[in-house]
Image (cartoon, rainbow, N blue to C red; front, side, top):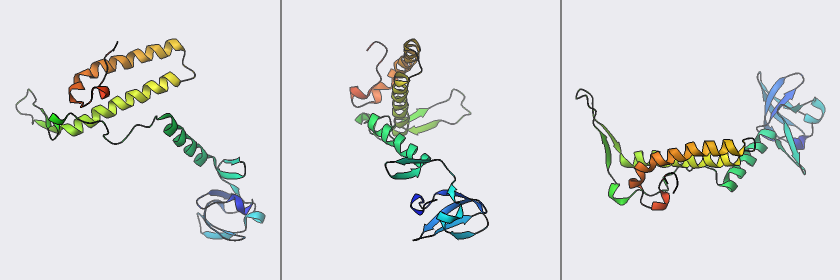
Length: 181
């Protein structure tokens, strides 16, 4: 194996020592941690091979898993399919600092209080997940148009059910739209 094909963190297989992970790379050798010890190996003559699939792109060699991870991350970003972790949708000002209070019918049970921002965040995340699901269904190559329409109807019904929570949204454009809107 060529020394240039190695990178720190790469998993490799040695005919005598088995699986190892590249720790450092020098001019002619690589320090590799195997189960029993860290060894200095000369990759060109040792019979060292990658332990994971590799992809070569116009002179660039990286592990296939890393290439796929980077490609998927870039695709998600370009298609804007990522579900945001932050609460970017504004809560209506009248609810800032508010609390959702649930009183059980059974007086022996405790009342549950939840900050309205926490509840709202969960509603927004559900809305965002429904949007991503819509995109994935509409872009799915193996579903027929009839199957896409059927699944889309379920999502539309979910949106309709969620319109109850539209009162919490500051902007009408962020709200759930009921079926037919």
